[in-house]
Amino acid sequence: MNVINKSLGLLFAAALVLSSCKSNKEAYSATYERAKAKQEIQAQVNDEQDEQIEVIEKTGVKEAAEKIEVIGLAGESGPYAVVVGSFINRTNAENLRNKMIDQGYKAVLGQNEKLMYRVIVAFYEVKADAQAKVRELSKDFPDAWILIKE
Image 1 (cartoon, rainbow, N blue to C red):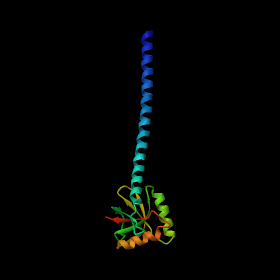
Image 2 (spheres, rainbow, N blue to C red):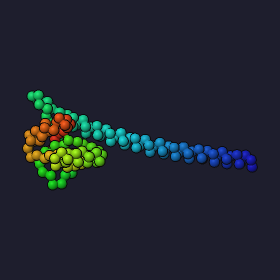
Image 3 (cartoon, helix red, strand yellow):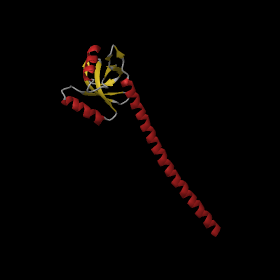
Image 4 (spheres, rainbow, N blue to C red):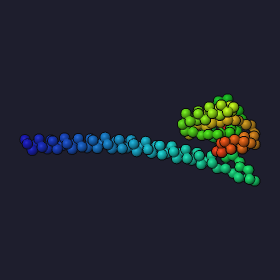
């Protein structure tokens, strides 16, 4: 009887240890998955920034980086949009948009397929006009670029 009680006690202790390991394993796995997702998002943001930073030098004049994108914008005209900021966080995008509105721009937010928010300050029918606006903004917004709406 004593041997049975010891055996049952050991089985109970083993089950308790194994079940607590499972909780720790689940917690570790969940933490790992969150960290992995965060790393993937950061890699996506870095890729977006790398694409925006590509600038072409021609005859000593800095030309704006350009990117073709499907972007959600209702009622805005002109295929060339001048972007002064890109954010994954909507609050940050809204803060810059409000700052630009305070400075007299008709700034709007757009969101692309990768859920990045774009702060857009102007739309143009002619690419050269958009490039001129980017050059004008470049001292205050050196990373400004042209989004070509698809």
